[in-house]
Image (cartoon, rainbow, N blue to C red; front, side, top):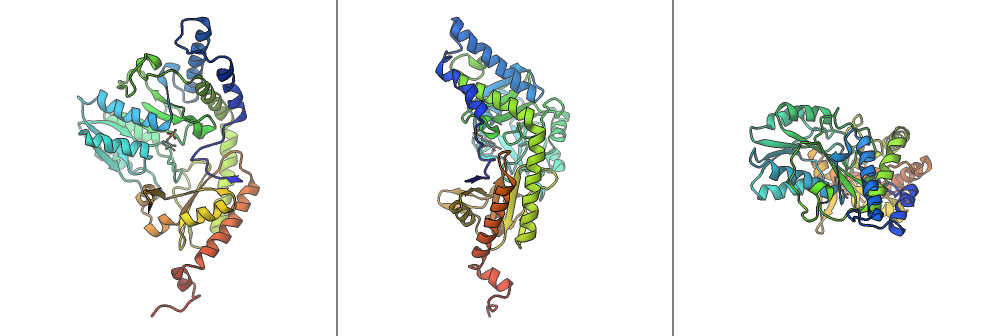
Length: 393
Ligand SMILES: *Cc1c(COP(=O)(O)O)cnc(C)c1O
């Protein structure tokens, strides 16, 4: 099997599994216990907080453990919305956010909040002029993702944070695709709140964290016990916390090498596709792009069909378009960068990880070339364009 869907999830590193096992097998204590057996796990959690914080230049007590990226995003938006509702009820975000952000915003709209969805340019980069122009007296939060999960575009985060702070507005970033993949410094980049998810950087699923700069108010969305300094109830998932810590540590140590390696494979793959498959385009920015992201649009094919054909060859990839309730809607991200619907529907996303090899990339491009060639033989529009059938009269 060739796995090229690392933006959807990643394999758990063996070292991560090894680090987690003792917390299932022997030290299974509830960290809130008063006995020494529990106290050990209390220390383990606080050490994990410090390690994770150090990766983004934060402090340990600014890290809150959650059940993943979706919870972190929900908490950031709803928690800020409630805590600052007397200051204002306006939030600014973009049209290309993950659904954890977009659907939370839709819910907040029903609760009486006003949300502005900013446009992006054709490369998928947020329009800073439009962002700044959208700021109002009652704006409480700007939420812009660090890097996009479909097209890999990296946003000018530091500049967005600067604009937010200039107007006395808080800045949240969904860094689920960025944490562990590219360098992040919350202080240098003017970030107040940041979401991350463990399974996107080779840690366990169902675990994530929210960074909240000290001094920022944030209402809870999960009420109960006093865990996470009273802000997020629920017995700590100690094995998963240890797993995420180990994954974050390894991600930090190996980051420079992985960026170099994945960028090399990515550029090679894009170059081969562009030179060997006609009527293809790269979706998203080539300059500000996650190392492992290859999102390509192909004319005269259906992305969904290409994926099924790839699967028959044991190659895992994703569509640029998401299936919803039987009908295939073109991806909101590809529509936001201005792609015609036909190309949005003919888009495929490959996301490369450090475990992929050059041989896998070569085989994938070979197979892709054949699949697209075969599909196009069934497209009247393609056959007409290439003069293989008489023009309709
Ligand atoms: C995967 C993803 C999420 C959701 O994270 P989960 O841990 O799967 O809930 C949120 N935002 C982005 C950008 C993502 O890629």
